[in-house]
Image (cartoon, rainbow, N blue to C red; front, side, top):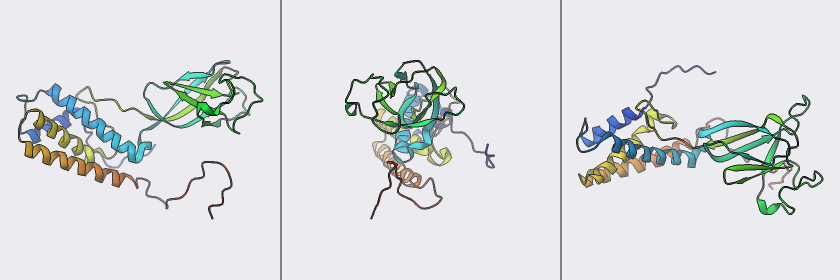
Length: 240
């Protein structure tokens, strides 16, 4: 585990709401209730989360495992699943000589036979394949054995709203970027209250400019080495 050498103040829902009230020039509840501001803050929090995902979605990558069951093709995805990044499966996990194989995505139209065909002689690609359908993930070949944590999935998670006063925002460098949320929330509150439309427009414009700047800065979050072309086909390609 890496040791942090700089202690930063977590940006909680209470802190964000206080910052919004600073823009509204209202330190305690009067024109704007806490519950209304919380709702608006969460709305723009999700807007910032979406902007982060557009530029550096791997910030929200997480890993989950599940068991395989005998002759069961489809499995439930994690409840906070948003996008898949990588899938691996081990068809014989109890065998110490076995290993995980990367499963590759496939479109249902690429399966020329019936989807649940268990004929192991049918091969679509060199790797196992998976498909997504609603909130499930399905595999071919179909697992034939019970396997403890035999499926691994790396995915981009959904980010939950903040409900409690002590809930913290989950974005990169929160000390730098939390103001995007509070400016936009204050702008919406001012418009909702039909107060100071000029100030509301200024705050909204600043928030959007800050989002654009954040996305540009996050493009180079991996600042080591130069950018390169990634071979995702596993073939020897001649780029000349």
